[in-house]
Image 1 (cartoon, rainbow, N blue to C red):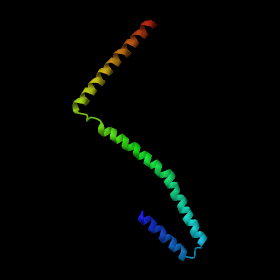
Image 2 (image 1 turned 90 degrees about the vertical axis):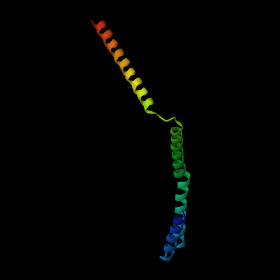
Image 3 (image 1 turned 30 degrees about the vertical axis):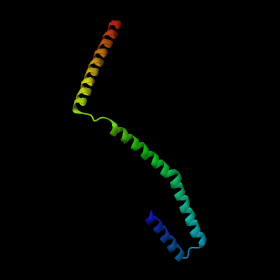
Image 4 (image 1 turned 90 degrees about the horizontal axis):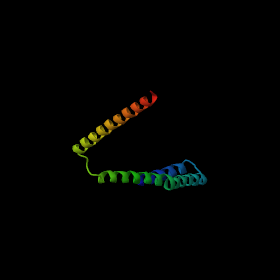
Length: 102
């Protein structure tokens, strides 16, 4: 922040030594104020909101219990059983459809 302000001051000093009028300097300052205001009122609140959402997500993940290898194997077993059940139901549905067609 300090370096930004220092850079702006140097820009203004350079502009004043190059023969810029007071109106031009004032215009540059007004443009800078407009840009800073926009950043404060639009850009920064949006960025802060996004970072807060990300923080909440990370906090939820951190609070979750750790997943063990056993948990993974258990879930894979459930998935396999569900897939088998789905296959059975699809087979029944096909047999019923072919029986009603025939």
